[in-house]
Length: 410
Image (tube, helix red, strand yellow):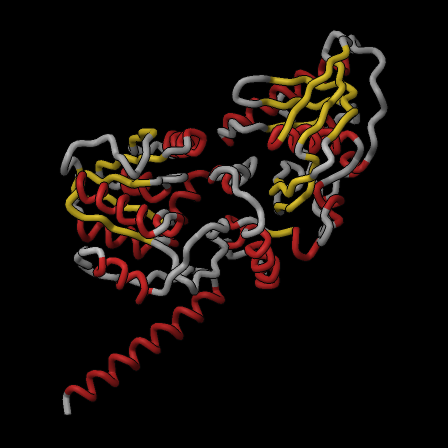
């Protein structure tokens, strides 16, 4: 049976389920019907979560999270499924690593937590047979996180600095319901992220979608927040135009375009991310098509598309690779529409390895390498504070144009 996830909110006493804070007692009778029912419910619930999240790196759930005070955890990866009874860490490495943690019971927040990067875990299976397993990196974190749950320990308890290491994820940041006081946490996070190695882009997105996340709302809100990009794509491409998104990520813009009449394909070199994008596309009945590939060497013939576009991609590459990617895009399309952050970007869309430039520097880069700029459109985040900043910038632009006009007309 699929069970409701028990929730703990450290800042709201009305959203704290005490069962999450209790240490479980060791199981002695492995054939007990309650034990078997708990395992069945854990698997049913985690299967549902896997369907929703599409996460392949590793995902887990423990008995207290669905209301059972038992030392049982279930962990799924792309290649294996583990049922752990009475698990405990018996050996660990001497080094720890900083992981970006999301938890189904800690759903409003993300945390930067240190765990051992390699552990050996002892556990018993459903028949009571003792086993040992050695895991490292991301899977080691998942095992330690789930074992923590069996001892009543949550991510919040492991934070070294609750002000800097606890934060609101970006989908919450751009919600109208998030108070502005959370921005301080967001800014401190960006500094932290620049100090850790980002394993894959999926590490940044893996817990983007909550248990009850509305995919349809996500696609619509993403299109609304990136309205300037959407309008430029619509301006230069008629309905039915063939459009390719290079480095699609979750492909929210492409899914939106496919639903309003464009022929859209998406390419990305991250299989897990592509799987997540396909899941979103399927759930909202989008018509986007997907292919696994390298944007530096696209698997298409010359001029296969009317437009190629990328959003939040080029800033991750050096100048030589930027040129290679753009040239490859213009080989298979008539126009390349590029959306990148500038040095002023403070919207928490960054993961830490971006090369941030001013608009002037981007212009110089394009012209120096022989590209013809058709037009430039500035885009501004939609949060209340950023709306004020964007209004100020627009007013400065207006005054500059007015001064230039007044000077030239004399």
